[in-house]
Length: 119
Length: 111
Image (tube, rainbow over all chains, first blue to last red; front, side):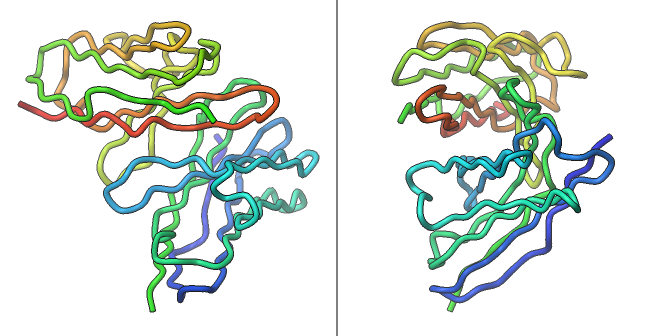
């Protein structure tokens, strides 16, 4: 049973960048898309983008295009989400999730990483 | 960009009652691209329904999904106490964007 383990909580100042990791244990990423979502306090889920670790191909929703970068390190079955130019509006719990290619469903989620942006 | 609108925003029902949650898309989407999740406070979302009508592994048969085109529905036939949570629909838009989006969620609360 694969487990997605995300890095720990972060506190950042406005204007800084943050990089959150998501590592798979128990199974490789081969054949899976890895997605990133976020959830601001008391708000709903917001989809951010995906990366296909096999090729490194990425897609981002327009809101995050140019400010979010998704990368991967297949040697350690990890994917990363980096946000630049943080503002207080980026304070949220960030989730990674796995999609078996072509199924459109996320059957496995990371535990979430709280990123707090405050001066 | 396809927008998903869920209604109602909050649904107040009692255990044993039937719940009907709606998800409307701004453009027609393939039913195979519609997925529903359940999220309880402080927890990670849980996969409920995929392909608009297929229950995920371990999901009780009181949960059902239906719909096509722009209108999709999640039905819980007889509410159990553990079903009170927030429910999100999600869609995938194929070429040329290959992007996803979530609805804003429906909170199902105990009346």
